[in-house]
Amino acid sequence: DNILSQAQIKLLLANTLYLMAISKREDVDPKVLDDKAQEYQEYIDDAFKSFKKIYDTSPYGETRDIAERKLAELYQLKGYIHMDKGRYKKAEESLLKALEMAPSEMEINIKYQLGICSLKLGKYDEVKAYLEPILPELKKIDKINALVSVSQAYMVMEKDLDRALALLKKAEIVTLEAEVVTLELEQDNFKKACLCNIYLQMAKVYYLKEEFEKASNYALQSLNQIIQEGPEVREENLDDFIEVLLYEDIPLQIKGQLLDILLFMAGLFQDTKEY
Image 1 (spheres, rainbow, N blue to C red):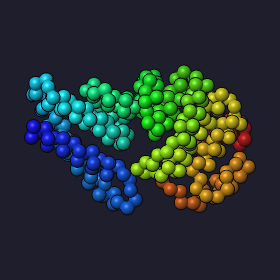
Image 2 (image 1 turned 90 degrees about the vertical axis):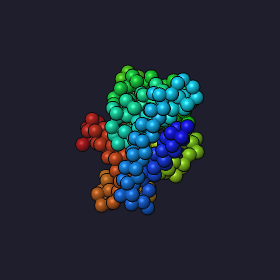
Image 3 (image 1 turned 120 degrees about the vertical axis):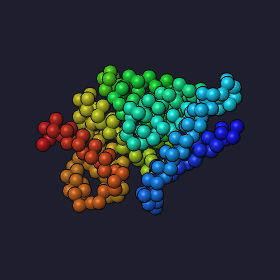
Image 4 (image 1 turned 45 degrees about the horizontal axis):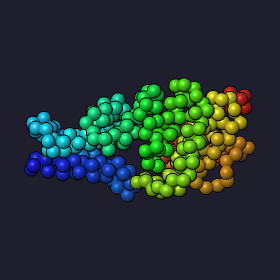
């Protein structure tokens, strides 16, 4: 019992330190976050060894069941950490072990993470297999991400563009109705970040459908979600907007989104001979 209690405390500490390490708060020294990351890894390793020993040596019963659940939680936490670091193959391995040991109430969340991981690995059939059956059970933020992920699977794997578009429109509705605040974004900014991605994916679907005007309109809608101030960007003032961008200090968190949109629009204009 003492070993079990100590292991549970170590797992709680590991979870707490992990959340602190990924908080990305501007008022926290990055060195402090790096130290927290090292600390939570040590607690994870210690907790894992303790729970594994209990699981391997205990007879079937309550103590072994607790150890099994906690091992599932640890494998899931390891999966989160690998995903956060971009190590998606290792994340998949950890999450599959978590799913194997997890009680039923943990399965939805693990399958969600496996679906997102599969998207990063380009395993589009597995994206559908993990995410589509659990869509009705997911909470708002996860449901939005899952809808967009499954739409990409249909778009890439089966070329079922109408199904992809229907899923993206559902994601748009869920986003507009959502009342959420995340660790990193307030509600308004969260919705804009989601809509930015949704509209860009819609633009890509319409591009594949060769409906280029709609593709351009949705790309511009995507762009306008990350514009903090100034006039709405339209095709006729796009050149002026890009000229301003050359002299602005763009926040790091939107640089990637901005680059994706502008590269897509450049390809679209090239294909429609608007050089």
